[in-house]
Amino acid sequence: MNLRERREKKLKEIVEFAYKNSPAFKERMDGAGLTPGNIKTIEDLEKIPVIRKDNLVEIQAKNPPFGGLLGVSIPSLKRIFQSPGPIYDPQGEEEDYWNWKEPLLAAGFTSGDIVINTFSYHLSPAGIMFDEGLRAIGATVVPTGVGNTELQVRIINDLRATGFIGTPSFLMTLLKKSQELGTEFTIKKAFVTAEPFTPSQRRTFEENGITAYQGYGTADVGAIAYECEYREGMHVIENVILEIVDPETGKSLPPGEIGEVVVTLFNKTYPLIRFGTGDLSKLLSGKCGCGRETERIAGFLGRIGDAVKVRGMFVHPGQIQGILKRYDIFADFVAEVTREGDRDFLHLKVETSDIRQAEGMRDEILEKLRDVLRVRVDRLEFVSLNSLKSKNKIIDKREWK
Ligand SMILES: [Zn+2]
Image (cartoon, rainbow, N blue to C red; front, side, top):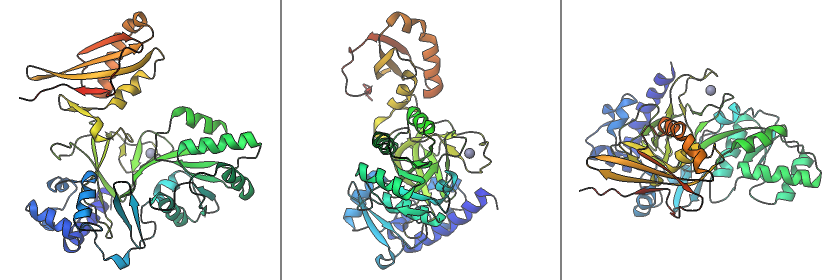
């Protein structure tokens, strides 16, 4: 069976199972006039209304603790976590419940590794998530949790730890502390997540003999996507169906278009089907050189609330920033969206230390913006430094009459 066949087989099973065992899922299906027989292919998923992470707090509070979303009874849960919201996250009995084994293997973790796991082990599931993934590989875990920098540096040195799990900033903090204390930093592999991983951080790690890979996941879902050795976007894990969805219509979008990351899990404990994470990303087209069958996404491109749709395309401040920060003459920016007749008008104001030089680069910047935003900037204006005072990077001034 190829990837699609494997996923569609699991999809039919989970839809059938959830319809019988999760009252909230049955209600959603019934409300849309659907039965499990209507969902046979990945494309059929579009028929099911998206359930949004932003609504989980309310859904769970109405019918605690899991709002009818659970597919099993409470005694078969291993643990219950609480993430900000508050949202309750269940952990079922399955080995590697959050699917981090696949990303960690891709990052080179093996049995024999001694890994310090610096994510929190209480309330939020992050610590246990990676612990389970590492154990499924056969690595030895040192549950160090958050903070205690000096102690952690000591532990790394004493145990000759080879691996790190945590945020890239905390890995940097540990590396610097170790250099300051003059101890040997034995970590050679790292898996980082939960915040952006910058090229300069990656370079520093590499200069110190540390190979770091990043992954993307959430507390409710677990692993979603991860980098392979090609590091061109992130591969979606096998055990998830990922769609990039237009938040307004609920329809799947083709590669290249930005939309909400909507996932479907094959998890009987917590069968989240068409679960809208509220995160923005896009699918990449083409096959990856590593040979994996799974599709790739561009990684985390922001939260839905920050993006504004211009002429049908989501424009996120992070995209504009990504281009401007390649040049050292640009600083802050503000984009304004107005309505001219029946057409959206996008006006971008960019602070620069050198207006004359910026003018010379106008065409180049406009072209780059168009490539990334997939929508044309109608007016690009260069202004002097510190002249933009807006707190919001994108201001939507349209009035819909
Ligand atoms: Zn790859």
